Image (cartoon, rainbow, N blue to C red):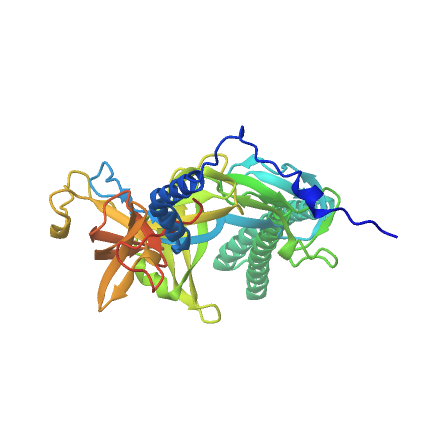
Length: 426
């Protein structure tokens, strides 16, 4: 059986604690007021932050200024092309007669003079032939001497017979025989002269054959490639199994004092080039070094398959670091004004000759008028511009932009004036 407690006993325990502090009902209201004040004060900053984060992200580039050169006109780039360094005068030196190489007087990098013997082919057989030809000349000369002596004796005998026939001592038959003998002797002398000339010609042929065993440098230069070794058999038409040696070449000689860049230009860009146009040459191996160049030749024909035209640019002051077959880039530039001629600025540029360039991607067209968007104070500002000629992937701006302005590349179509933007990478 369960005994329930009495309600009266529970009520007896209830007491009022009159020593406790009174409740402060205003505190929650004060906290609420502080929170509202903080929210009100931070709302503009938060709104600006949210707007900034929601602003479109843009890529910018700085407007650059080209500084005029000492001649009065700046070196403005017109076109860039790539190619390879080659020697204007280069030759694969080969042999005139086939045979085994007996001597080589060069290695890669050897400087040679015009006419110097740089290699020899074995020529013992040619020397023997030359000696035989010279002996044949000596033999022909000896036979000629005998013929001359015989001719002189027959001429004297003919004179005696004529004197005797005049005195009536000899017969007409003896005179006729003496005359015939003199004629035969004269013919033998002429035959001996011809034999000597023929023998001397054979000597010259043998001497030429001997000379052909020598390989001489065609001009002053440097051996840039060695194509054969001592003991190899070479031929003017090449030897089977030696495909790398075209036409019997044993060395490649180049004049390193006159180097140029062999490059190719699109047909659409050839019109930008002018004769003797200045250029800047940079080697891929030495990007920090620029060399002055000059357009030497635009080839008279194009490649229809590639739609390109070959162009040669002379390197004006090459140093020993410039070597054939190096990769190079060429920047063609506007010709400088002649020394002493003052560059007259365009009327659109004001009184100062200022050339400002911006990327072509920063220019947009609205209603047929060009404009750019400039970032200033975190907002985009629209600016109408006056454009000049194109410079590679840049374009000249004659008004509307000053050097250092941050222009927006590929501006979004939704961009509005004074709208906040975020710069990419910041």
